[in-house]
Image 1: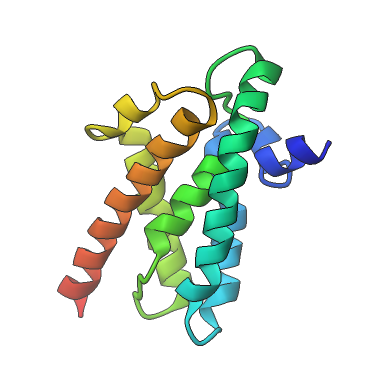
Image 2: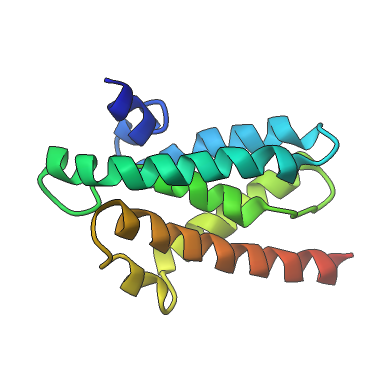
Length: 151
């Protein structure tokens, strides 16, 4: 029961249609809550590290449970990807930043630019997690550039 709760990001990944998108919403909430702290990224970093460790360890379980690679209800990887996309991003308001991070993280996760898709082939939880990690890095670089252009 705890494994299912964690891997679906508090059951958001069990919602119909777009489970990865739903599963990202707890990360959006965390980002908005952390915004009011003196350095939100320093609050987010340990949570990100923990979510990556848990995603890798639960990934193999989720694949066995679902009987297929990278089951759609497993969203802890999208949670981590969103947090990576938002590290040290400042777009003025927490809501504007959270929205732009959400759009960029989902876009790069869905489009999977090279070599994101190749990382999916890694075994178990590694493959589930690392494509979203790299997509989050791409989204972060995009948002860092965007924030400097808009500044």
